[in-house]
Amino acid sequence: MFKKYITFILIITCATAQAQKVKVEWVSGNVTVYKKGTTVTGKIKKNETIEPTDRVFLGDKALLVVSDDSKKLYEVKKKGYITGKELSEGLGKTLDSEYQRYMAYILKELKSHEGEMKSTEKGIPGAPSRGDDFMITMPDTIRIFSYEQLPVRWVSSINTEMINMQLITDKKNVLLDLDVNGDEFWFNNINTYFLVKKTLILLIYERRTDGSKLLKSKMVIKQALIDEEKTKKEFEDEFREIQDARLNRIAKAIKWEINQYYLKALETYKILLLDYPEDEIVKTSFAAFTERTGLE
Figure 1: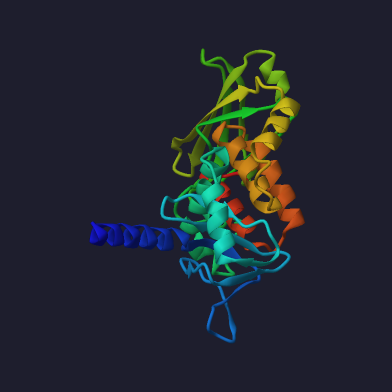
Figure 2: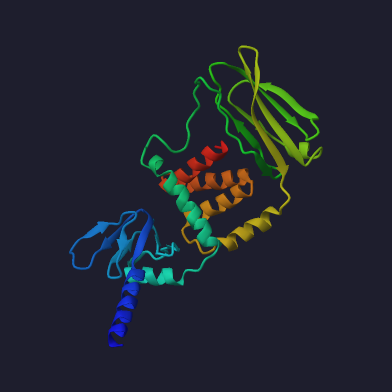
């Protein structure tokens, strides 16, 4: 009986010790750790394990996200010193929520584009150049508010003569049919088209030098049916727990994006780039958004 009791205590003790360890999921800025028994501090690295006895220091613009064995995420809001034990306690108090879901999504995006962050030549896409293939990226469906301008960008090939754009209704009634030179076109006052139909279809054709005409993109454009200001307030409440301003706005941009309001997401990223022009997280998140949607 006594041996069973000792075994039980050992199991509980080991489990508790294991639960107290936390793993670094993401780190940026000045974040260092002081290990017990050492006399120097070292920079914290991603995937590093933080022991309960460790002391971590976060600078003013630093960001640290940690996890436990249950994969819960904890964003460290405290600047200055924090112990490994405090990190473990913070994870223990963390509940499953929308915050957790979007934090996980943001981290996934950051990790998937980590290689781009390490290259100074990558990030925000630059000016297009002509190659052998015509290239255009557009969402399948986009929802826009009446006042928004819709940009369309593409990269012509060496065989592209011009671009043909057609704006039609679902009944194939042509509202706009024009040929365009260059690599960019903006729709202004799109609300005038919504007077005809609340759902429009934009077709992009490449007219080639050999006389052929190839369909390159099809996008459904839908008028926004939500109250913009009310939705913004809902986002404020939903992401109130994300204290880091960069992650907070990125979460809002992603929320706009997954609901097909890509131009609102683009607007959010533009503000982020103005406020944090050299921030790697912001640049990489925007680059990933551009790659997915074609919007710059």
